[in-house]
Amino acid sequence: MAPRLIRNIKLVDPETDEVATGWLRILDGLIDACGTDPAATLSSDDVTDGRGLYCAPGIVDLGVKVCEPGERHKESYASAGRAAAAGGVTTIITRPDTDPAIDTPEALEFVARRATEDAIVRVHHMAALTKARAGQEMAEIGFLKDAGAVAFTDCDHVIADTKVFSRALTYAKAIDALVMVHAQERILSKGAVATSGKFASLRGLPAASPMAERMELDRLIALGEMTGAALHIDQITTARALPALARAKANAVNITAGTSIHHLTLNALDISDYRTFFKVKPPLRDEEDRQAVVEALREGAIDVLSSMHTPQDEESKRLPYEIAAAGAVALETLLPAALRLYHADALTLPQLFRAMTLAPAKRLGLDVGTLRPGAPADLVIFDPDAPVMIDRTKLESKSKNTPFDTARLQGKVRATFVGGECVFGGLDA
View 1 (tube, helix red, strand yellow):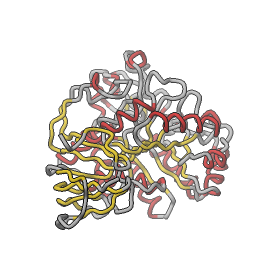
View 2 (view 1 turned 135 degrees about the vertical axis):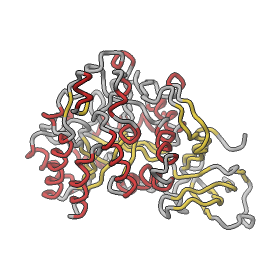
View 3 (view 1 turned 90 degrees about the horizontal axis):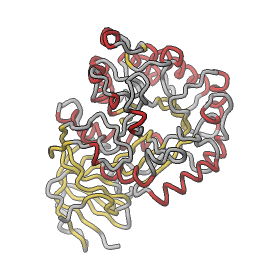
View 4 (view 1 turned 90 degrees about the vertical axis):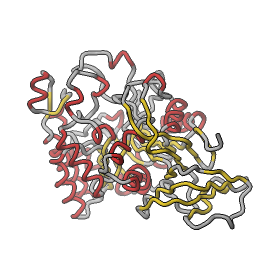
Protein backbone atom coordinates (compact mmCIF):
# COMPACT_ATOMS: atom_id res chain seq x y z
CA MET A 1 0.00 0.00 0.00
CA ALA A 2 1.15 3.54 -0.70
CA PRO A 3 2.02 5.67 2.33
CA ARG A 4 -0.80 7.85 3.62
CA LEU A 5 0.16 11.21 5.05
CA ILE A 6 -2.27 13.15 7.26
CA ARG A 7 -1.23 16.78 7.60
CA ASN A 8 -2.47 19.59 9.78
CA ILE A 9 -3.63 17.56 12.79
CA LYS A 10 -3.17 18.09 16.50
CA LEU A 11 -1.35 15.03 17.87
CA VAL A 12 -2.49 13.99 21.36
CA ASP A 13 0.39 11.95 22.76
CA PRO A 14 -0.30 10.18 26.08
CA GLU A 15 3.38 9.19 26.42
CA THR A 16 4.90 12.66 26.14
CA ASP A 17 1.87 14.35 27.75
CA GLU A 18 1.76 16.84 24.88
CA VAL A 19 -0.66 18.17 22.27
CA ALA A 20 1.01 19.67 19.21
CA THR A 21 0.07 20.45 15.62
CA GLY A 22 1.85 18.15 13.21
CA TRP A 23 1.51 15.24 10.81
CA LEU A 24 1.35 11.46 10.82
CA ARG A 25 2.22 8.96 8.10
CA ILE A 26 0.72 5.46 7.81
CA LEU A 27 2.48 2.67 5.92
CA ASP A 28 1.50 -1.02 5.76
CA GLY A 29 -0.96 -0.66 8.61
CA LEU A 30 1.60 0.87 10.98
CA ILE A 31 2.50 4.37 12.10
CA ASP A 32 5.54 5.02 9.90
CA ALA A 33 6.42 8.43 11.31
CA CYS A 34 4.90 11.46 12.98
CA GLY A 35 6.16 14.83 14.03
CA THR A 36 5.63 18.53 14.40
CA ASP A 37 8.31 19.62 11.91
CA PRO A 38 7.33 20.42 8.29
CA ALA A 39 6.31 17.27 6.41
CA ALA A 40 7.03 18.63 2.95
CA THR A 41 10.03 16.35 2.42
CA LEU A 42 8.04 13.18 3.08
CA SER A 43 7.01 11.24 0.02
CA SER A 44 3.44 9.94 -0.06
CA ASP A 45 0.96 9.08 -2.76
CA ASP A 46 -2.00 9.83 -0.50
CA VAL A 47 -2.08 13.16 1.33
CA THR A 48 -5.02 14.16 3.51
CA ASP A 49 -5.69 17.47 5.21
CA GLY A 50 -6.62 16.86 8.85
CA ARG A 51 -8.26 20.32 8.99
CA GLY A 52 -6.89 21.02 12.45
CA LEU A 53 -8.70 18.08 14.06
CA TYR A 54 -7.21 16.12 16.95
CA CYS A 55 -5.55 12.72 16.45
CA ALA A 56 -4.97 10.29 19.33
CA PRO A 57 -4.31 6.57 19.72
CA GLY A 58 -7.48 4.54 19.32
CA ILE A 59 -9.19 3.78 22.63
CA VAL A 60 -8.44 0.44 24.30
CA ASP A 61 -11.61 -0.41 26.21
CA LEU A 62 -11.01 -2.86 29.05
CA GLY A 63 -14.12 -4.66 30.31
CA VAL A 64 -16.66 -4.70 27.46
CA LYS A 65 -19.54 -7.16 27.59
CA VAL A 66 -20.49 -8.68 24.24
CA CYS A 67 -23.44 -10.98 24.71
CA GLU A 68 -22.31 -13.92 22.61
CA PRO A 69 -23.01 -16.68 23.37
CA GLY A 70 -26.42 -16.73 24.99
CA GLU A 71 -27.86 -13.22 24.60
CA ARG A 72 -27.01 -12.17 21.09
CA HIS A 73 -30.20 -10.08 20.94
CA LYS A 74 -28.55 -7.66 23.41
CA GLU A 75 -25.22 -7.28 21.61
CA SER A 76 -23.28 -9.17 18.95
CA TYR A 77 -19.69 -8.85 17.84
CA ALA A 78 -20.88 -7.16 14.67
CA SER A 79 -22.93 -4.50 16.51
CA ALA A 80 -20.30 -4.03 19.23
CA GLY A 81 -17.65 -3.54 16.55
CA ARG A 82 -19.70 -0.87 14.80
CA ALA A 83 -20.44 0.86 18.11
CA ALA A 84 -16.78 0.80 19.06
CA ALA A 85 -15.66 2.26 15.73
CA ALA A 86 -18.27 5.03 16.02
CA GLY A 87 -16.89 5.87 19.45
CA GLY A 88 -13.22 5.88 18.52
CA VAL A 89 -12.60 2.54 20.26
CA THR A 90 -10.17 0.45 18.20
CA THR A 91 -9.56 -2.38 20.67
CA ILE A 92 -12.14 -3.98 22.95
CA ILE A 93 -11.28 -6.37 25.78
CA THR A 94 -14.33 -8.53 26.41
CA ARG A 95 -15.61 -9.92 29.69
CA PRO A 96 -16.52 -13.60 30.17
CA ASP A 97 -19.87 -12.97 31.92
CA THR A 98 -21.82 -14.52 29.07
CA ASP A 99 -24.35 -17.36 29.12
CA PRO A 100 -22.60 -19.76 29.45
CA ALA A 101 -19.44 -18.18 30.83
CA ILE A 102 -16.23 -18.24 28.82
CA ASP A 103 -14.53 -20.82 31.05
CA THR A 104 -13.19 -23.42 28.60
CA PRO A 105 -10.79 -23.24 25.65
CA GLU A 106 -13.64 -24.34 23.38
CA ALA A 107 -15.87 -21.46 24.49
CA LEU A 108 -12.99 -19.04 24.08
CA GLU A 109 -12.22 -20.31 20.59
CA PHE A 110 -15.90 -19.87 19.66
CA VAL A 111 -16.04 -16.20 20.65
CA ALA A 112 -12.62 -15.53 19.15
CA ARG A 113 -13.84 -16.90 15.83
CA ARG A 114 -17.03 -14.85 16.02
CA ALA A 115 -15.06 -11.70 16.77
CA THR A 116 -12.63 -12.31 13.92
CA GLU A 117 -15.48 -12.87 11.47
CA ASP A 118 -17.79 -10.04 12.53
CA ALA A 119 -16.03 -7.22 14.40
CA ILE A 120 -14.43 -4.34 12.50
CA VAL A 121 -12.15 -3.45 15.43
CA ARG A 122 -9.55 -5.47 17.33
CA VAL A 123 -10.97 -7.82 19.96
CA HIS A 124 -9.15 -9.56 22.81
CA HIS A 125 -10.88 -11.78 25.32
CA MET A 126 -10.75 -12.34 29.05
CA ALA A 127 -11.78 -15.72 30.43
CA ALA A 128 -13.36 -16.80 33.71
CA LEU A 129 -11.08 -17.41 36.69
CA THR A 130 -13.35 -20.12 38.12
CA LYS A 131 -15.69 -22.55 36.41
CA ALA A 132 -19.05 -20.93 35.59
CA ARG A 133 -17.79 -17.93 37.60
CA ALA A 134 -19.13 -19.78 40.65
CA GLY A 135 -16.05 -19.32 42.83
CA GLN A 136 -15.80 -23.01 43.66
CA GLU A 137 -13.25 -24.52 41.27
CA MET A 138 -10.49 -22.90 39.26
CA ALA A 139 -10.98 -22.85 35.51
CA GLU A 140 -8.33 -24.31 33.20
CA ILE A 141 -6.55 -20.99 33.05
CA GLY A 142 -3.33 -22.41 31.64
CA PHE A 143 -5.14 -23.86 28.63
CA LEU A 144 -7.24 -20.71 28.36
CA LYS A 145 -4.14 -18.53 28.25
CA ASP A 146 -2.67 -20.77 25.56
CA ALA A 147 -5.95 -20.32 23.63
CA GLY A 148 -5.54 -16.54 23.70
CA ALA A 149 -7.06 -15.20 26.94
CA VAL A 150 -5.35 -11.92 27.85
CA ALA A 151 -6.64 -11.86 31.45
CA PHE A 152 -8.93 -13.70 33.84
CA THR A 153 -11.92 -12.49 35.82
CA ASP A 154 -15.14 -13.62 37.44
CA CYS A 155 -16.43 -10.08 36.79
CA ASP A 156 -18.84 -8.95 39.50
CA HIS A 157 -18.98 -12.41 41.11
CA VAL A 158 -16.73 -12.00 44.14
CA ILE A 159 -14.99 -15.25 45.12
CA ALA A 160 -15.96 -15.80 48.74
CA ASP A 161 -13.72 -18.81 49.40
CA THR A 162 -10.36 -17.25 50.14
CA LYS A 163 -8.54 -20.58 49.80
CA VAL A 164 -9.94 -21.16 46.30
CA PHE A 165 -9.14 -17.55 45.42
CA SER A 166 -5.57 -17.70 46.70
CA ARG A 167 -4.89 -20.94 44.83
CA ALA A 168 -6.18 -19.43 41.61
CA LEU A 169 -4.04 -16.32 42.11
CA THR A 170 -0.97 -18.43 42.88
CA TYR A 171 -1.48 -20.35 39.64
CA ALA A 172 -2.06 -17.11 37.73
CA LYS A 173 1.23 -15.81 39.10
CA ALA A 174 3.00 -18.99 37.93
CA ILE A 175 1.84 -18.51 34.34
CA ASP A 176 2.25 -14.71 34.39
CA ALA A 177 -1.48 -14.03 33.94
CA LEU A 178 -3.36 -10.86 34.84
CA VAL A 179 -6.46 -11.21 37.03
CA MET A 180 -9.18 -8.55 37.04
CA VAL A 181 -11.19 -8.39 40.26
CA HIS A 182 -14.26 -6.61 41.60
CA ALA A 183 -13.91 -4.68 44.86
CA GLN A 184 -17.30 -5.05 46.55
CA GLU A 185 -17.75 -6.98 49.79
CA ARG A 186 -20.36 -9.52 48.71
CA ILE A 187 -22.58 -9.66 51.81
CA LEU A 188 -22.73 -5.91 52.47
CA SER A 189 -23.43 -5.11 48.83
CA LYS A 190 -25.91 -7.93 48.18
CA GLY A 191 -29.17 -6.50 46.82
CA ALA A 192 -27.94 -2.90 47.02
CA VAL A 193 -28.98 -0.58 44.19
CA ALA A 194 -27.78 2.72 45.69
CA THR A 195 -25.07 4.13 47.92
CA SER A 196 -26.16 4.43 51.55
CA GLY A 197 -27.01 7.85 52.90
CA LYS A 198 -29.88 10.28 53.33
CA PHE A 199 -30.68 10.37 49.62
CA ALA A 200 -31.09 6.59 49.31
CA SER A 201 -33.20 6.51 52.48
CA LEU A 202 -35.52 9.23 51.20
CA ARG A 203 -35.96 7.30 47.95
CA GLY A 204 -36.59 4.03 49.78
CA LEU A 205 -33.84 2.18 47.90
CA PRO A 206 -31.80 -0.71 49.34
CA ALA A 207 -28.29 0.63 49.73
CA ALA A 208 -24.77 -0.39 50.68
CA SER A 209 -22.08 1.59 52.44
CA PRO A 210 -19.17 2.77 50.30
CA MET A 211 -17.05 0.89 52.85
CA ALA A 212 -18.07 -2.32 51.03
CA GLU A 213 -15.59 -1.29 48.36
CA ARG A 214 -12.83 -0.49 50.82
CA MET A 215 -13.32 -3.75 52.74
CA GLU A 216 -13.03 -5.97 49.67
CA LEU A 217 -10.15 -3.91 48.32
CA ASP A 218 -8.21 -4.55 51.55
CA ARG A 219 -8.80 -8.28 51.10
CA LEU A 220 -7.69 -8.17 47.47
CA ILE A 221 -4.55 -6.25 48.36
CA ALA A 222 -3.68 -8.83 51.03
CA LEU A 223 -4.19 -11.68 48.56
CA GLY A 224 -2.11 -9.89 45.96
CA GLU A 225 0.67 -9.32 48.48
CA MET A 226 0.55 -12.97 49.58
CA THR A 227 0.52 -14.54 46.11
CA GLY A 228 2.42 -11.96 44.06
CA ALA A 229 -0.26 -12.18 41.36
CA ALA A 230 -0.86 -9.30 38.96
CA LEU A 231 -4.22 -7.73 39.87
CA HIS A 232 -6.36 -5.13 38.17
CA ILE A 233 -9.30 -3.68 40.12
CA ASP A 234 -12.08 -3.18 37.60
CA GLN A 235 -13.74 -0.15 39.20
CA ILE A 236 -12.63 2.10 42.05
CA THR A 237 -15.52 4.44 42.74
CA THR A 238 -15.17 5.79 46.29
CA ALA A 239 -12.83 8.18 48.09
CA ARG A 240 -12.42 5.77 51.00
CA ALA A 241 -10.77 3.17 48.78
CA LEU A 242 -8.08 5.49 47.45
CA PRO A 243 -5.70 5.59 50.47
CA ALA A 244 -5.60 1.77 50.57
CA LEU A 245 -4.87 1.67 46.85
CA ALA A 246 -2.07 4.22 47.25
CA ARG A 247 -0.51 2.22 50.10
CA ALA A 248 -0.61 -0.97 48.07
CA LYS A 249 1.17 0.69 45.16
CA ALA A 250 3.74 2.23 47.51
CA ASN A 251 4.37 -1.26 48.95
CA ALA A 252 5.06 -2.59 45.45
CA VAL A 253 1.98 -4.81 45.26
CA ASN A 254 1.46 -5.68 41.58
CA ILE A 255 -1.85 -3.84 41.32
CA THR A 256 -3.53 -1.40 38.97
CA ALA A 257 -7.02 0.04 39.10
CA GLY A 258 -9.67 1.35 36.78
CA THR A 259 -12.90 3.26 36.93
CA SER A 260 -15.88 3.64 34.63
CA ILE A 261 -17.02 6.64 32.64
CA HIS A 262 -20.35 6.63 34.45
CA HIS A 263 -18.78 6.88 37.91
CA LEU A 264 -16.47 9.60 36.62
CA THR A 265 -19.20 11.83 35.15
CA LEU A 266 -22.43 11.02 37.07
CA ASN A 267 -23.37 10.88 40.74
CA ALA A 268 -26.00 9.41 43.06
CA LEU A 269 -28.40 12.32 42.56
CA ASP A 270 -28.87 11.28 38.94
CA ILE A 271 -31.13 8.41 40.05
CA SER A 272 -33.55 10.77 41.79
CA ASP A 273 -36.43 10.03 39.41
CA TYR A 274 -35.74 6.26 39.43
CA ARG A 275 -34.46 6.22 35.86
CA THR A 276 -33.16 2.69 35.48
CA PHE A 277 -30.74 3.64 32.69
CA PHE A 278 -28.69 5.16 35.55
CA LYS A 279 -28.62 1.87 37.44
CA VAL A 280 -25.09 0.50 37.21
CA LYS A 281 -22.90 -1.76 39.34
CA PRO A 282 -21.50 -0.61 41.69
CA PRO A 283 -24.17 2.05 42.19
CA LEU A 284 -23.45 5.69 41.43
CA ARG A 285 -21.65 7.46 44.25
CA ASP A 286 -21.87 10.81 46.02
CA GLU A 287 -20.39 13.88 44.35
CA GLU A 288 -17.47 13.95 46.80
CA ASP A 289 -16.53 10.44 45.70
CA ARG A 290 -16.80 11.36 42.03
CA GLN A 291 -14.49 14.32 42.48
CA ALA A 292 -11.98 12.22 44.42
CA VAL A 293 -11.92 9.61 41.65
CA VAL A 294 -11.38 12.31 39.00
CA GLU A 295 -8.43 13.60 41.02
CA ALA A 296 -7.03 10.08 41.41
CA LEU A 297 -7.22 9.56 37.66
CA ARG A 298 -5.51 12.90 37.06
CA GLU A 299 -2.66 11.98 39.40
CA GLY A 300 -2.33 8.45 38.04
CA ALA A 301 -3.42 6.68 41.23
CA ILE A 302 -6.23 5.20 39.12
CA ASP A 303 -4.72 3.93 35.93
CA VAL A 304 -7.52 3.02 33.51
CA LEU A 305 -10.75 4.62 32.32
CA SER A 306 -13.18 2.32 30.53
CA SER A 307 -16.78 2.15 29.42
CA MET A 308 -17.75 -1.03 31.34
CA HIS A 309 -20.16 -1.46 28.41
CA THR A 310 -23.04 -3.64 29.64
CA PRO A 311 -25.96 -4.04 27.22
CA GLN A 312 -29.41 -4.74 28.67
CA ASP A 313 -32.63 -5.11 26.71
CA GLU A 314 -35.76 -3.02 27.19
CA GLU A 315 -37.58 -5.77 29.09
CA SER A 316 -34.90 -5.92 31.79
CA LYS A 317 -34.67 -2.13 32.16
CA ARG A 318 -38.35 -1.13 32.00
CA LEU A 319 -38.94 -2.39 35.53
CA PRO A 320 -39.09 -0.85 39.02
CA TYR A 321 -35.64 0.46 39.93
CA GLU A 322 -34.95 -2.13 42.61
CA ILE A 323 -35.40 -5.13 40.29
CA ALA A 324 -34.25 -3.67 36.97
CA ALA A 325 -31.03 -5.00 35.49
CA ALA A 326 -27.84 -3.05 36.19
CA GLY A 327 -25.59 -1.77 33.44
CA ALA A 328 -25.32 0.72 30.60
CA VAL A 329 -23.96 0.79 27.07
CA ALA A 330 -21.08 3.20 26.60
CA LEU A 331 -18.87 2.28 23.64
CA GLU A 332 -20.17 5.21 21.59
CA THR A 333 -20.53 7.67 24.46
CA LEU A 334 -17.21 7.03 26.22
CA LEU A 335 -15.23 9.72 24.40
CA PRO A 336 -17.77 12.59 24.41
CA ALA A 337 -18.62 11.85 28.05
CA ALA A 338 -14.93 11.81 28.98
CA LEU A 339 -14.48 15.13 27.22
CA ARG A 340 -16.80 16.66 29.81
CA LEU A 341 -13.79 16.48 32.13
CA TYR A 342 -11.54 18.13 29.55
CA HIS A 343 -13.97 20.98 29.00
CA ALA A 344 -14.31 21.39 32.78
CA ASP A 345 -10.49 21.70 33.04
CA ALA A 346 -10.41 18.66 35.32
CA LEU A 347 -8.21 16.55 33.02
CA THR A 348 -6.04 17.31 30.00
CA LEU A 349 -6.42 15.44 26.74
CA PRO A 350 -3.14 13.52 27.24
CA GLN A 351 -4.28 12.53 30.75
CA LEU A 352 -7.59 11.26 29.41
CA PHE A 353 -5.98 9.31 26.60
CA ARG A 354 -3.30 7.91 28.88
CA ALA A 355 -6.09 6.30 30.91
CA MET A 356 -8.10 5.17 27.87
CA THR A 357 -5.27 3.95 25.64
CA LEU A 358 -1.71 3.66 26.92
CA ALA A 359 -2.42 2.38 30.45
CA PRO A 360 -4.77 -0.50 29.53
CA ALA A 361 -2.54 -1.52 26.61
CA LYS A 362 0.57 -1.62 28.81
CA ARG A 363 -1.20 -3.58 31.55
CA LEU A 364 -2.32 -6.20 29.03
CA GLY A 365 0.97 -6.27 27.13
CA LEU A 366 -0.57 -5.05 23.86
CA ASP A 367 1.33 -3.04 21.24
CA VAL A 368 -1.43 -0.47 20.74
CA GLY A 369 -2.38 2.72 22.60
CA THR A 370 0.52 4.82 21.37
CA LEU A 371 1.57 7.14 18.55
CA ARG A 372 5.08 5.71 18.52
CA PRO A 373 6.43 4.83 15.05
CA GLY A 374 6.13 1.10 14.43
CA ALA A 375 2.92 0.76 16.41
CA PRO A 376 -0.31 -0.30 14.69
CA ALA A 377 -2.04 2.65 13.02
CA ASP A 378 -5.06 2.47 15.31
CA LEU A 379 -6.23 6.06 15.55
CA VAL A 380 -9.18 8.23 16.46
CA ILE A 381 -9.53 11.63 14.82
CA PHE A 382 -12.01 13.86 16.59
CA ASP A 383 -13.28 17.37 17.16
CA PRO A 384 -13.42 17.96 20.93
CA ASP A 385 -15.60 21.05 20.57
CA ALA A 386 -18.26 19.76 18.18
CA PRO A 387 -21.69 19.57 19.85
CA VAL A 388 -23.30 16.14 20.11
CA MET A 389 -26.86 15.33 21.09
CA ILE A 390 -27.05 11.72 22.26
CA ASP A 391 -30.04 9.90 20.78
CA ARG A 392 -30.16 6.36 22.08
CA THR A 393 -32.30 5.19 19.16
CA LYS A 394 -29.42 5.99 16.80
CA LEU A 395 -26.73 4.09 18.69
CA GLU A 396 -25.04 1.25 16.84
CA SER A 397 -25.40 -1.05 19.85
CA LYS A 398 -28.35 -3.41 19.74
CA SER A 399 -29.26 -2.38 23.28
CA LYS A 400 -30.03 1.28 23.91
CA ASN A 401 -29.64 1.56 27.68
CA THR A 402 -27.56 4.71 27.98
CA PRO A 403 -27.90 7.22 30.83
CA PHE A 404 -26.76 9.91 28.39
CA ASP A 405 -29.90 9.76 26.25
CA THR A 406 -30.83 13.35 25.20
CA ALA A 407 -27.66 14.69 26.87
CA ARG A 408 -25.87 17.55 25.12
CA LEU A 409 -22.17 16.72 25.01
CA GLN A 410 -19.11 18.03 23.17
CA GLY A 411 -16.79 15.81 21.18
CA LYS A 412 -17.43 14.10 17.87
CA VAL A 413 -15.47 11.29 16.29
CA ARG A 414 -14.66 12.20 12.68
CA ALA A 415 -12.69 9.09 11.71
CA THR A 416 -11.50 5.83 13.25
CA PHE A 417 -8.62 3.83 11.80
CA VAL A 418 -7.72 0.22 12.62
CA GLY A 419 -4.46 -0.99 11.15
CA GLY A 420 -4.43 2.04 8.86
CA GLU A 421 -7.88 1.25 7.43
CA CYS A 422 -10.71 3.71 8.00
CA VAL A 423 -13.55 1.80 9.71
CA PHE A 424 -15.69 4.81 10.60
CA GLY A 425 -16.20 8.26 9.12
CA GLY A 426 -13.45 9.79 7.04
CA LEU A 427 -11.40 12.90 6.37
CA ASP A 428 -11.80 13.22 2.62
CA ALA A 429 -15.35 14.62 2.60
